[in-house]
Image (cartoon, rainbow, N blue to C red):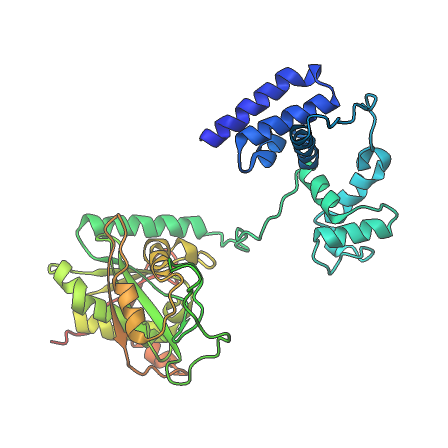
Length: 410
């Protein structure tokens, strides 16, 4: 805040004096202010006044020469108003037009454009403009782009594709059902599979405090270790208690693995938190191992419902809306933040990093390694699907349904 106030003060002074100072006096005044400011003074004065940093440096050199040798005379020549080299856009009025055309969003689709398949860097833009008869440097291109309101920007994930016509209605349906379950004190969980992670001394994005010049060394190439391979964290997030469970699998991300993780959560945490539970509600993505069209998921849930002796209600999010799943931003994001910059060198390290993830809001997570084998390619026949004790909701039964326990298993 002090720096901002200092720059604002310099700007105020310049507005008051600019009209009564000639070219040399402005240069010397700016140099004096830069010197008084200290480190970074040239940039600060340049930002406050709009004067070129080179002009301010020239003023500093002139002041230094005069102070070092009192007899030294600084040139007294002053340019007439409007003198000096003309700005590029004044000497070449078409330059801005051509530059704007080159950086326009349609440029890469223009078969006549030399930048169709080229990164639009200032060097490439300067080269193309020079080829068109507008000689300009990359630095000048950057200045013109800034003045025209352009800036360096990355991609932003905002496009979700075609939205399902019942998308909003499904969100409202899920929200209403979650509230009903929570008001009755029944368990509501959000489930999903986190991104697979390589196990071993591999680079993990993010930065961690280390002694200067002593970064943790990791492998140059990310080839999977033949023994350690990858891990598959499957999470279960208790939406009412802000608690989570993560089963760290080492085989395959299948529906059986997903339901096994839910069963482990219930055995280790859920049954203790909800001893009077009469039903379980699961909110899940529409695809993956817990997808709405995955037959094995429903078969595995039937087994789970029978083992727990509870009806299992499921609500799937509409296609393309997985980011709205509570587990994504209330649990998984914090796990990623907790292990940033830390190589995931072993299964034990991964489990401990997950289990020690906390937040100020009180998030608690338990984690466990699942060494089970979950084969892929299991086919569920129409007869097997028809035999399930499955009840479809009136609204979008393909997304909302209940799996009722066929029998109790003590």
